[in-house]
Length: 151
Image (tube, one colour):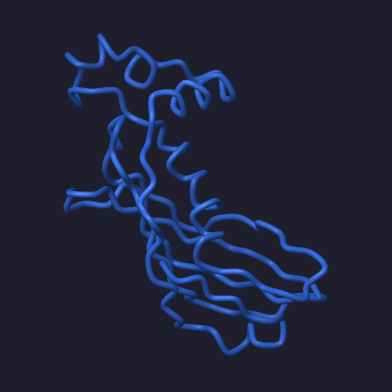
């Protein structure tokens, strides 16, 4: 893992920058249950380990949106901007859940700054992110994340 720290003034020149990989993060049943409680999504493939053993994945799986939400803490391992007043998670463009994340799996994220554009009072970056599952060929999530920074 390498953390890139830049100033607001350096943002415009970062298009195409590969930010590398995060450390691995293990997905636990406790995380999945907490997410289920927070979102009121208690489908058995997520929250019933015994039933999930006989389900289509052979184990409980993380909610796709749980995996997606981990972009934020993983992102903080890779990138930060100093000297700004406000940082805003502006949204997502393209998101695909390409492989289920089984409980006990370890995931990590690779990120590249795809675009940098000026917006009123600030700068927006679009990152291309791939959340990988250790030992799996296909990633769990592929997403374009938008963040805004205001000086």
